[in-house]
Each structure stands twice: as structure tokens, then as C-alpha cells.
Image (cartoon, rainbow, N blue to C red; front, top):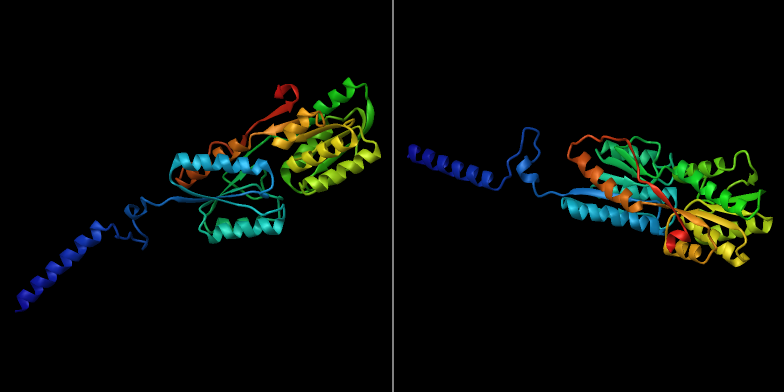
Length: 318
């Protein structure tokens, strides 16, 4: 009898072992599922931008989504505040962590405000890739415009246009987002450098949070002061600047940053001289490729990738 019971127990043990193997539920030595159980998993990757207002960020999202679709192994989400706000961007990062993010593509609103949230993400093993604007925290890679060089090009475009009109001195206004966003700070630095050694006075920068309506009011005040030129540091700043110049009759030279339908129309109508067009689709697309490559255990060749910029003026629109 004992022999029969022992034989039955042995048969049942073999059956359960076979079922367990066929279901792929075996665990490795650390108690986690083995590689067979992870084959169907997708990487959780989040894009977190400064806001959802600008067409620039919509294009970054499009680039990231295109890469995710091509890769086929990514569960991709875009999170962003409704306005540029440090606290709201921190909330987005925290939501990504809680949502199981394995990598975050981040356009940081400021260099320091998000540090604690990024430290928490790092502690969770989340990989960080910067697109457009980095924070002062280590990341796998930064993909962005060479903003200082592009800002200098914007200044040179304005200077040439002023000289072509016979204007060799005067005041110039600068409308930007805030005093901390790395990308726009570098653009302003480059823009100002173009006027070094000239008789032009570049006034103290005024900030409109990237909001077109606020930026328009700032630009209108500059025009009242009698400026000969205004530089807009991002999409909202540029739209506001162009609209203020349009409302004032179009005598002031306006140069800006980013590309949107409104900006292109203002250039076509002659109220903006030119804009520095970035490649946000490249930032999103290549940023996603970098994030997945790092998650797969690959090393990154470059810490920084210049995604390029081009000058768009009326001639370029013909």
C-alpha cells in the first residue's frame, strides 16, 4: 500500500512540474520571473515637457511616438503641465514614477527645481534622457539645439536687417520665458553676444512665461520705449512679439525662436524678420531611440547631441 501511495505522489509531482515549465512561471535564484516570462513585456517610457501649449512640444511628442511605433516594444505616454510651472512639472515626474516608468524623456522647466524628483526616479532605476532643455542632474544623454550658437545667429540676422535700414544704434528688447530655463538662457546669451562692440543697447530681459498674451504686452511696452528691435526667446515669446509689432504698424525688427503656423504667418506678412527653427521631431525621435537602447543595456556614444537649427525668413517661405 505504501509503495502505491509513493508512486502516485511521484506521478503527481512530475505532472505539476511539467505544467509549471510549460507555463513559463519558473523563477530564478533571486525570486524574480525568468527571462521567458518577460518576453512579451514593453518598456514604459514617458515624455514630460514644459507644457502642452506650444506646437514645439506637440512635434517632440510626434517624433517620440513615431520612434515608439517603429520599435514596437514601447508603451509610450506624454505627460505635461498645462502651463510652465515647476511644481506642476514635478507632479508630472512623480506621476510617471508612480505609473511604472522605466525611462523619462524630459524637457526641464528649470535646472534645479526638479532635482529631488529626478533623484527619486534614479533611485527607482529610471533612466533619464533630456530633450530640448536639461536639468542640473546626470542623464544618459541630452538632445538639444546648440542654443547659444543659434541665439547668436538670431542676433546677427537682426543686426544685418537694422544696418540694411541704415540703423546703426538704438535700443533692443528681449522677451523670454524665465530666468532659469537653460535653453532660453543660452539663446539670450548668444543673442546679446552678436551686439557686442556695436552702438546698440540690449535692454534688460523681460519674462512672459512663454505665454503669447503676456509676451505681447511686454513687447508692446518695449515698442512704447522706442526700441528698434525685439528678440523672442521661444514660441510664445515670438508670437507675442510678432503680434505686438503687427499692432504697432510693423516698423520694429522682430526675430524669434521656434516654428509654428502663427510664426510662419507673421513672417509671411512681414511682421517678423525671421525665426530660428529647431528640430523638435528629431529630439523626440532620437530621444526615444536612446532611451530604449539604454534600457536594453547598451552604452551611449555621446552625452550631447546637437539636433540642429535653421533660419526661416520670408525668402525661405517662397
